Length: 136
Image 1 (cartoon, rainbow, N blue to C red):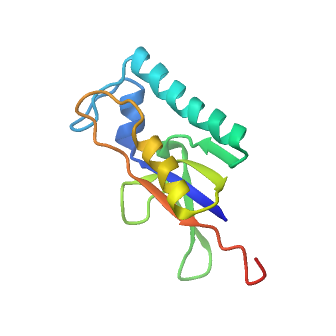
Image 2 (cartoon, helix red, strand yellow):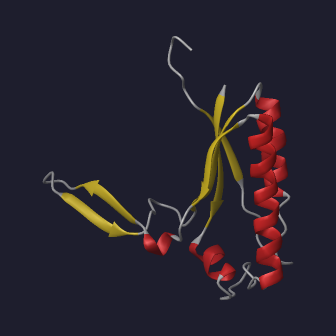
């Protein structure tokens, strides 16, 4: 079965990676960024080698996003950012094809073990099965 594995973040977490600290989001050093990219790259390499990786990407900062909604008059209402009623956003994702929910949970546990600066608020990882339709 295919699963969408989503890592969440906030604009503050993106700012911290660019060196701008805020409460709960200490600024990342170059070494910490390198460790994070190495950790995520190793996960991608292992998933590709096992044949479980379908797709995966990190997403750009929320400040570079827009949301388009239908207004009361049917015309589009455009706002900056991907926010609905929360400041948390999708920061990256993987689509994996795994034998079980237990296996994809193991992968998510490895993702949350990503190195981060001390004092960082850990980013949650959400697993969603992809509905493959009634014939799957």
